[in-house]
Image (cartoon, rainbow, N blue to C red):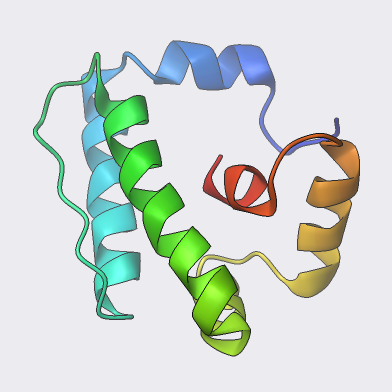
Length: 102
């Protein structure tokens, strides 16, 4: 899989308190612009699962109810349709919601 950030860098960043807090704040802001609540407890050790679970619910809902709204959200976070298609192709066996959320 080709990505902008190497998997090892992501794994290290998962436990950097500042990066986790800033990422959570940005995710909360982005989803709030579309009327979706996301919360973060501040626990960096469970942050990934905590946020993933919430985002997965929102993204699955959008996939089932409003594809255009989902695409608007993805555009807001710099994931266009071409990039999404590539990510899906790079992750066979994963659900679209998992690919987007991760």
